[in-house]
Length: 359
Image (cartoon, rainbow, N blue to C red; front, side, top):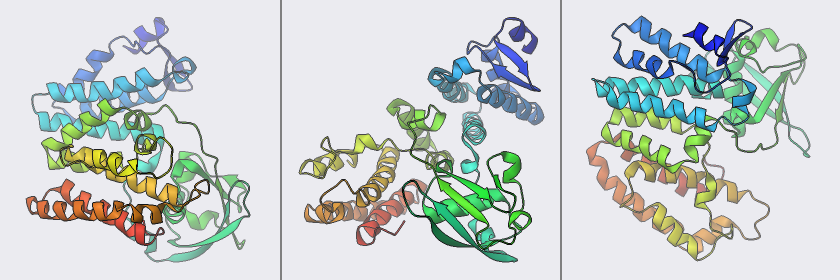
């Protein structure tokens, strides 16, 4: 397969890796059949790794307009799962494939971390300098186990600053190096902490335009999102695994804003449509997740002349949410993972109304 595609200039061998030059790779459809039909786990793992490798090593021509190629990964994953003899196995394999692709193409934010490990002895108190555009540098303090890696340090910084991993870089002053590669993420904190008072510099990056990656593509495509919602509806195991992935997606907040981008009488109607009991429960979960972000975003927006929280309170938005919360609590006796998650997010929205620093 590889040799044929290289001869047809669809693939090329570059620095010990395969690069895709043409999205119409010969044999790709048959390659996708193997993991969903094969019973040999070792072969399944190898083929899945090869598929992810093909979709993450793209030539410049595909990178310039990757949307269709990215969509094909999502489409093939779920189509093959639906055709599998064991649909539950096929769906869980599809979710695993999507997670592997996201981890490889968009970073390690999709790798689960037990935050309790941050405080395991031996710990160290680190003072970190934070640099933002057009702002004075400030210091934050982190207490973290010094035998953990740079990867753990970045995640701790992300949690402390409420900033996605993709929106900042970390520099070790001791070795005068930006810590950006996967190899550098594996470095041990104690080995690069040095003796300076502020051993690390965090540089917050300016907001970038929407990137054409799988998470942003799904986030901005209603049909793709609804396909995941339908899977979540079928099985609570699917719901839990898919939601773990979707929490890392960038919400398309534009669809939750009023046309004027300010709070007005239309917002109750807008929210009523988004939070309608007739709406699929999992779509409702996504809307609450996005609106929680929207509340936090508007709370700190200097462009607004009126305090968003106070306006929402006056217009009864939070009373409305409370009534929704009560109804959902009654539905919790079904012991559904999704119902419990809905209640959690409504509570977070209500707590945000009381204190914008609650997250």
